[in-house]
Image (tube, rainbow, N blue to C red):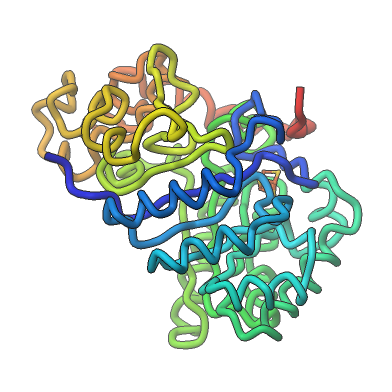
Length: 358
Ligand code: SF4
Ligand code: SF4
C-alpha cells in the first residue's frame, strides 16, 4: 500500500499572457472551455485533504487568469490545506493579493525571466512583463505574504546570476529559487537554445555557493542544477506516485506535470473517479511505483530506492521507452544522447520557439 500524497499541484488553467520557451505545460495546451469548474475544484480539494494532502500549489499557466481563484484558495483553506500561489505576476496586484490573503493564501512564488528588463521581456514573449512583475513583488510585500522569487536560468540569462541574487534581496524575498530549465515539453523543443555550457554552469555554481555563505540567515537560495550535467539522475517527484499529485486544467490526475507525454497510459480524470481510487488503485499510478518495474542496470543498483531510476518522462523522451533507465544516469546504455546534447551546447544559441496555443 502506498503512503498518502504530500502535495498537490493544481494546474488550474493553461492560459497565460506569457510565452516562455521553456514552459513545462504540454505542447497541446488545454482550452478554457475544458477547465474544471469552481465546484469541481472545491470537491477535488476536499478529497485531497481527506486523502492526506497537506499542501496545494496553485499554478498553471497563470492561475490568476481564473477569476474564481480566491474561492479555490478559500476552499483549500476550509479543508486545512496550506496554499501557495505560483505566478508570473502579470495579472493583477495588491487588490487581488489582499483578497487571496483573506481567503487563506500562505505564500507567493513569483517567477522572473531575467533581471535585465529587455531580456526578461524577450524571453517571456511579452513587452512590459518585467515592470509588472516588479510592481507585483512590491504588492506581495505590502500584503505581508512571504515571497519566494523564482529565476528560471539557462544559457541566455545565466551570466546575470549575481545580479539575480541582489535583485531577490531588493524585492524583499526570503527565498530565491534558481532553477535551471528541465528539458521537457517546450523546453525540449528549445533545448539547443537553452542548454548552458559547462563554463557557464561552473561559474554560476561558484557564485551561488559564495552567496549562500554570505547571505546565511538573510536569504535562502535553492539551486536546481541541470541534470544533463550530473552523473546520476534526480529522484524525480521523489518517485512515481510516492509524494505528489498533479491535476491538469481539465481534471486529469498525473504523477508529475510531464506524464501526459507518455503514450499508452490512460490517466484517469477526477471527473470520473475519486482521488483515493486514482492514487491507490489506478493502473497509471501503479505502473512505475516502487522498484518491481525496473530493468537492468537499475534493478540491481544500490541507488534504486534513492533516485527510483530517475525520470520516466525523460527516459521516454530521450530513449523512447519510459521503462528504461533515465539517460542522464552515466550507467544508462542510452547516456550517449546526453553527451551529444552537451556538445550542441557549445554552439551558437538558436532562436526560440515560443509557447503558443496551436
Ligand atoms: S513558464 Fe511562462 S508561459 Fe509557462 S505558465 Fe509559466 S509564465 Fe506562463
Ligand atoms: S542505474 Fe538506475 S538506480 Fe542506479 S543510479 Fe542509475 S538511474 Fe539510479
